[in-house]
Length: 178
Image (cartoon, rainbow, N blue to C red; front, side):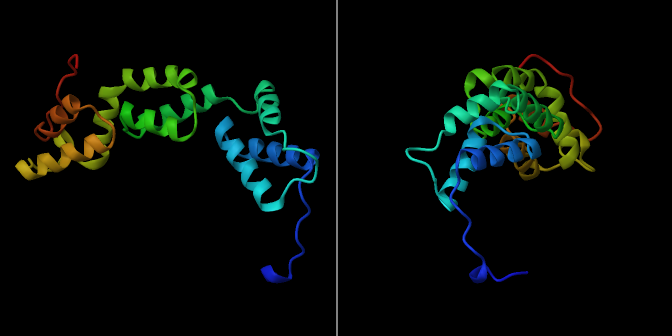
């Protein structure tokens, strides 16, 4: 592997090189406008901008979004479904979508879907972690508190977390309105 000190510096980016980087990134990764902007900004900081004025990041990102290469709603739906399948609650889904830079309007449908799957997600998380009805033996008070804290950190509402954490092994509680 060549030594970093012996490498030639890469030339500054121009509009064509910036577009190639954006297309490469969107082709390789499912991404959001915010993540693409952060990636391109990082590349500009590393290599510089060869043309006059500021780099046309916003115009490039909006053009790629218009072509369907970047779709914040689809990304939000995919990420929310993935987190819900893994057992994370609606609050954790909302935090992940916010961290990905997805606007509230673009993530609303995904957040609603995660909320609708709250009970199923809580049971899936409990199963993965061996909590409540999926524990090998009944937990003592400290064990139930620890399990409830884990459920809360996973983004589940307190009511659901408590119902699942205090359930006896093998007895899956019925879903009620919460």
